[in-house]
Amino acid sequence: MVGHHRQAGAYEVVTTFACAPGAEGSRLELSIGNQSWTGPEVPATQSWQDFVTETAGTIEIQKAGPANVALKVADMPRGAVVNLRSLVLRPLN
Image 1 (spheres, rainbow, N blue to C red):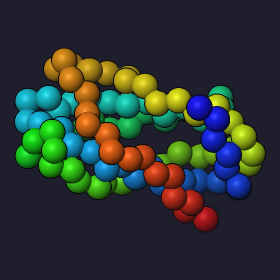
Image 2: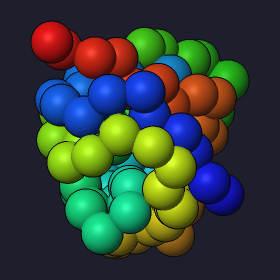
Image 3: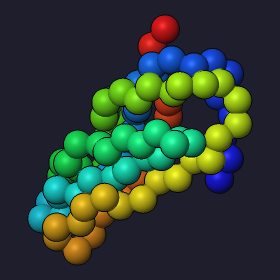
């Protein structure tokens, strides 16, 4: 997927997700251009349909404009990853 960022700078990574108890612990990796960010371990919620929104960290985007964007599993210790509803980048500047 190709994303387009209007400005370079720091962005907050905000996710809305669900993860059943016993499946927690996976990590996702977000790549934008030649930069990558690995998120914290996904915590359990009440079920696969119990969505919560959390700030997962920050990523620094070095230059504005189009860039290839990819989201992949970095670690999956318990056989499932996450029910990801959304991932939003919010500018910090």
